[in-house]
Image: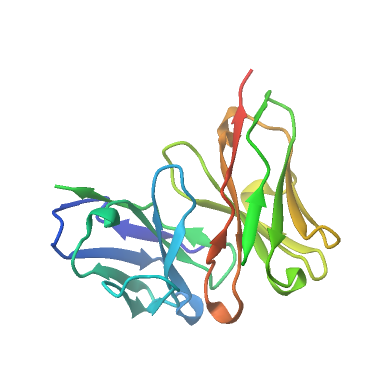
Length: 108
Length: 119
């Protein structure tokens, strides 16, 4: 199974600042099928990025994904109040599909 | 528009079984794999398995082998997830999600079904 490790566990920032979230895989992610999700309490996950760097429909352009192989990054250029939430990476290139443990982005 | 609408919350006793439904609409049912993911209270996301509605093929996470069964009904475009021998560890929010074609990720999700296992 591919283990995904996200860092940091918690990120405390202020609106307007930039954020960098990391996701490291225990082995190479097939076809760079790496996704990023945003989740708010009590809601379903929202797909932000797929294929490591492609924005999903409706994802604001302040969100960008990068990386390949085993190291991936989600960057949020200027935080808006609605961006404070949990973020999960997921690899869907090989079964079993796995998620990282999440990064909590909180308001400082 | 694409919709995935799940059945309502349930409370079950330990040892019981649960069957959660995910009614789909707005797309060709047989053309997309559907996945089940769960989230225990305060915890992360855990993939349980997928079903291919085209032929009923399934693949389950090893952790759930022997306890989970996923089925589909093409006449109602609904997928089901059966989980048996419930314990308190199965208390979670269960989601269905539609896989997009061509590696475009899982954009569409159901609203979630809360399953509580308690005596």
